[in-house]
Length: 589
Image (cartoon, rainbow, N blue to C red; front, side, top):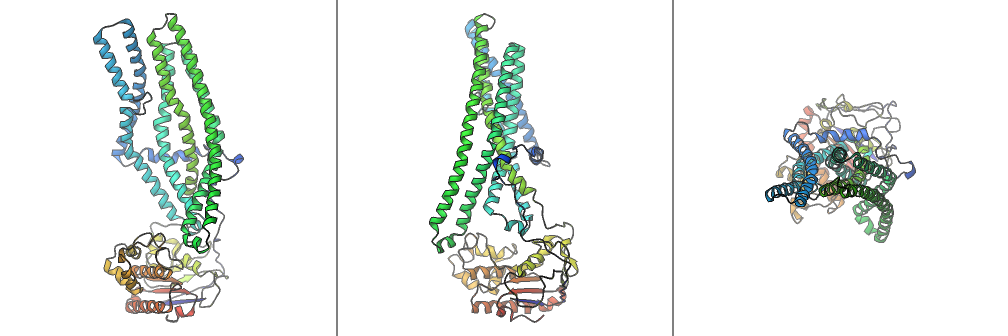
């Protein structure tokens, strides 16, 4: 294997035995949901860290309009609580006036007020009334702000992690964790603020109201039912959490298997392995559905236990109220008030168990996302130091087992790893890499990388047009500049033959193009960037001899044209290649 270093200004390569590199495959993993269920912790573990993650999105700082919407939604919540108390009261008044044969005018006013309250409240639980619908409408912008903030934070953090981390992860798993984590935060805010908190307030108000206006026995019945209901919900839900985790794990495995199979579509066809892939996916689906059955069966058990508690409380309270009415201590309207209030209270209480389960499930779904956010960046980022390249002087401190000099060596000896170190995909554990006397670990990554152009061994393109894939290195480039770069890479004529020319979609990962065409697009992308340091890693390995010679001539022509400037600005080119012919056109070191 030939390593050829061509410099048009001073180049210094220093070897030392004081540097060692981080292992390429450290054992760092996301918190797994596939561990034995018996050792799984509660979903409420790390509750403080999860709440701290939510707080910035509850109160949008620096956005007065959204803060106003949050306050207005809180005010509407308070109004709903008042309406929920008044609806049973006016229901009682209507019944009493009908029983007493009161005046028509008074009855009309009472009925109109009751109807207005029901319009504001909705279907008995405040879930579809005017106030609830208005609150949901106003909350849309806040919810979008939350979703946008979480997704951008995650996306930025993932791009800040090292190449090593990405090489050890399955993209399907990561994307699934991101999707579930993002939706879980939105769900948590909605469930806690607009379901759990209002229900707890309604319970407290109901207990106080019945103790004050009925008797302490009614308050005791309601309080006892609430305690039993909540205790049963918490205990059974905690028990069934392990099934939710197992289901998430198998869901990740099934989706990752499908994504991996589809990304390797051509390989599957080469080896006639369609049936094998279907069987593997079928097995993954069966494992997922087995865990799903456990989760749904335990849910049915919880629902039955909740129904028994609610029915018992309703029976006890109704019998007590009926006895007092028959004894003349209460009016018929009081029985209607009790029944209306209890049914109205039990409806959201019945959903309370569901919301608790959903909150717990959301916390479980957040676990992998939190693990992503807490992944430490291996490459330190300096935000205030700018890299300046005047004349190129490269000083690489490497260990004895990887020495940088002109030689022939085997595949896998670390050539591409050196380029990744220069590009700061990795940082060395000790020692340093200096360019023009500057330690590259002490400068901003974006500043350093703006001076470097790379043609990698494996070219992966975006699912976009050919023109946009070339323009990706300099998004402000004009169409003429893109075409000039394509000519230098000997791909211009081929692009014009495509159905839509430069506007032709290349497909996912560029699979519509051949290996040689993708490599030439990568070369054109690098030429368009006009970097001062060029790293060519097997840049023409997928090309035929004639095309390779054309590109070599184009690159030589490009750099011969800018060489007079390079004596002032500094140009550096590092070619890693297997065939000697690919570097035979270069100048000697």
